[in-house]
Amino acid sequence: MPILDRLKKIIPAINKHYTVVTGPFIMSISSPVPSVQRYIESHYAHNLIDCNDNTFIDFEIQIGFGKGIRRWFRQQATFTFNHHQPFKPLPLNQANAMLEWGMNWVISSYAHQYLIIHAATLEKDGNGIIISAPSGSGKSTLCAYLAAKGWRLLSDELALIDPETLQLHGLGRPMNLKNQSVDLMRNYYPKSAFSPIIQDTHKGKISLVKARSTYTEQLPLVADPKLLVFVNYDPSESCYAERVTQSHALTEIIQNSFNFGLLNQQGFQTAKALVNKTKALFIEYHNFQECESVIKEYLDERSSIPRQQSGNTASSECAHIT
Image (cartoon, rainbow, N blue to C red; front, side):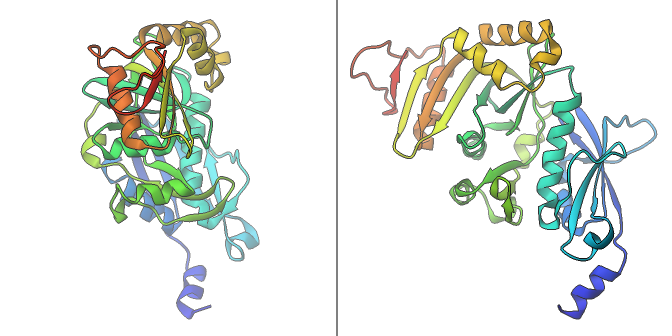
């Protein structure tokens, strides 16, 4: 090992503190890990604020080094929330991903003033869309593509629905891209938008990608939800769209919610009201341009999507049925 690298392991690391605004939350994040410090200063530059005595901190978290021998040999990273470590340590090269996963965890575990859905959310021209799908179905990839094409990124992981207003609250955080999605999105983002590749995570290869700051800086990160989109990435299907019934949409929202059961009747009423006020469709795709065209058509009140007429195709060349 080079002498400089040996010295870096011996010299005590400096613990840095950051106050990060992410949507409706303010987080205090501290870390002595240099890679985490560089990541926050790069990918959260537009989220950083000065903290004073009047700043209310919603969540206080830390990414630290592993204890004992794991501080020096086969180094590990730890996630601490309120002086408690809810997760096992991970290899140090996964510290940035651990930060993002931990931020998702504290929000989904404690922010029960919202109905929280596992979904990507974006907004354009006042129209909010919720893209919901199981992990690995192309949700974050489509979200990253739309964000590159002028849609305002709200979140690539968590949809926060206010039960009182049904407004969609965003977080304005980097997008978590995995495996082939990383290479696909290099065509749409500058090199500086990508974090260093994180190898061998439980989700495979990961890169954290920051959206254009001009979109995430447009505060507040709130939108009126107009469309529910359930997606599946299929390399053999250019683009296929199908309208979704309200009952099916409600079932999907419930299944993909983190805290539906905890909210009890309020959770059901919020989910039902959300489905009642939005359109819903299922899209199977691999062509991003056609997928975006279909989403725009469904958002356009003047657009008339064909209803179960054999052989119908839309102008975007994406097949539709109702």
